[in-house]
Amino acid sequence: MNLRLNGRVALVTGSGRGIGAAIARRLAAEGAAVAVVDLDRDDAVRTAADLPGSRGYGADVADLDQLRSVVDRVHEEFGRFDILVNNAGITRDRTLRKMEAAEWDEVIRINLTGVWNGCKAAQPHLLEAGPTGRIISLSSTSYLGNFGQVNYAASKAGVVGLTRTLALEMARAGVTVNAIAPGFIDTAMTRAMPAEVFNRVVASVPLGRPGQPEDVAAAAAFLASDDAAYVTGQVVFVCGGYSVGAGHP
Ligand code: NAP
Image 1 (cartoon, helix red, strand yellow):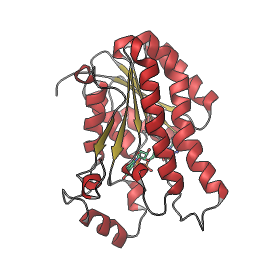
Image 2 (cartoon, helix red, strand yellow; image 1 turned 120 degrees about the vertical axis):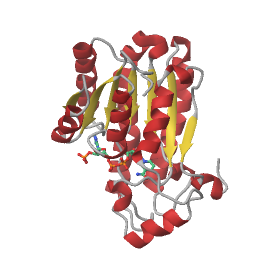
Image 3 (tube, helix red, strand yellow; image 1 turned 90 degrees about the horizontal axis):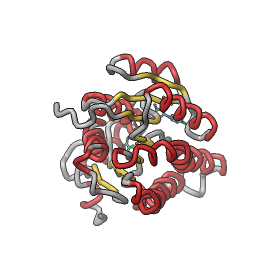
Image 4 (cartoon, protein in one colour; image 1 turned 60 degrees about the vertical axis):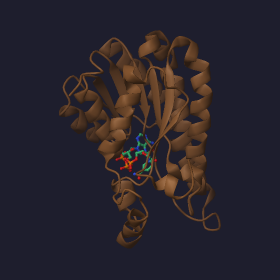
């Protein structure tokens, strides 16, 4: 493996399992020291235990104070802070007719405000890092519109607007800010669907399979590396052609 991230320090939210854990493993494999952050601290510590030079921390991304204290601790313990991956996210799917206000609020609070909290907490350290500074946030192809996901789609569209705007605000420091829009990835989030629905969605993916967390992690590693130094304000689709088949970007 090409050690593109040797000496860099990365923090990945929601990385106790799923896509976040795959991103943490891939960044570590490329030489980064990774702060694995999860709501469930035990999951974070377990994931970090397999990654050389990495550590696990507990934090709720919806709570700015918690995130700020973990980000500052990571900067202090590792001596620098280069890469923030805003990965933590949830779904509470229902049509608007059946959706409760609490389900709207919870998804916006974690998926969108959680990304803002991460950016707010890490910005001073990333500005200090300068050209090695990276923000990578998880959006979703759902931001283009997906039945039963008004809350989730709105939160992920918000992540795109935040990303494009913050890319402009941080460009002068050399910090890049990008988003990844995964399509249908095989994790607990999608396995929560009835098997019949899961299989129907997979059948509509042009590449004929669900994505694996490692497919998303490969894109994150590219965006985190110097290879992507001239890429900012972009949304990278990792969806097996799913969005293209539906006539989207
Ligand atoms: P997942 O398997 O459900 O894992 C989500 C992780 O985030 C879990 O470790 C969870 O911790 C953590 N988390 C949840 N709420 C949190 C909070 N408030 N603070 C900190 N951590 C929290 O999900 P995934 O499929 O890996 O998805 C990862 C990201 O990719 C999400 O942003 C998701 O929206 C996005 N995405 C996924 C897909 C897909 O098809 N899977 C497609 C497009 C986009 P606990 O284990 O403690 O709950």
